[in-house]
Image 1 (cartoon, rainbow, N blue to C red):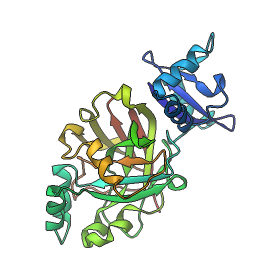
Image 2 (cartoon, rainbow, N blue to C red; image 1 turned 120 degrees about the vertical axis):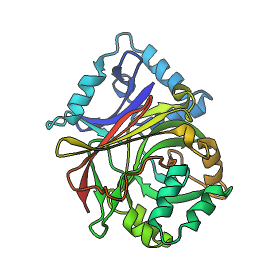
Image 3 (cartoon, one colour; image 1 turned 180 degrees about the vertical axis):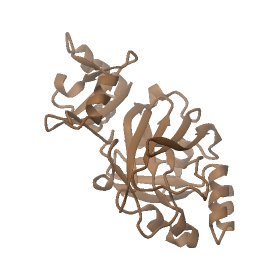
Length: 302
């Protein structure tokens, strides 16, 4: 099952997509479900999972109204904004891990004046982790992501992100970790400025439960960047190439570090455009992950 959060007629709703690509509004059936965090809370209380909770809600309605996924997204992308997609979880904190793929390690070595730093963290037990965003700084699907005006080489980083609740991973979504390679390349200590700035993080479009995703280490991640209506870059990676899996990263994140329920965590990228390519204002970034969907954002200078 896939879960979406969105605004409809000015109020927040949660929808669930089934295997037939039909979306049912859970909030219309049960007004107490106003966010995916509500589903997670009920699942935790009943010692079940969000798919089981959603199924019980669906079964409580004799004839639930549905909308096709294609129609839903047409409405979400339309100018009349009948539906406005939101991040699929109200993540109070967004964290990110880096240097989890060999390709990422090599690219960051190539850009840096201190290349040994990245080789050492790739081989170490302790992974690189950093704070990325809060909910009010998180961008929605079909909204804007930013590149810094003081940077000359800027890229999106397509990443599998996991969502946590009650001390465990409960679901997955697509993440876009916007990054300034110029600034990080000058000095690794500049990483917070290269990674954390206005419109530098996006999640979506859907949350997929841990039960529905299958093996999160067997997912294809595709990045497509369009410029002027044409494909300007395409790259692909697979989460099977991650040096450290999601459970390993989560274990390190919560060591001596309390995180609130709903915290979302980006797990690193295996696809980085080459040095001769940099994002420009107006570019459209599409990040597609198997079983989750496509996260789309338009680039602006911030």
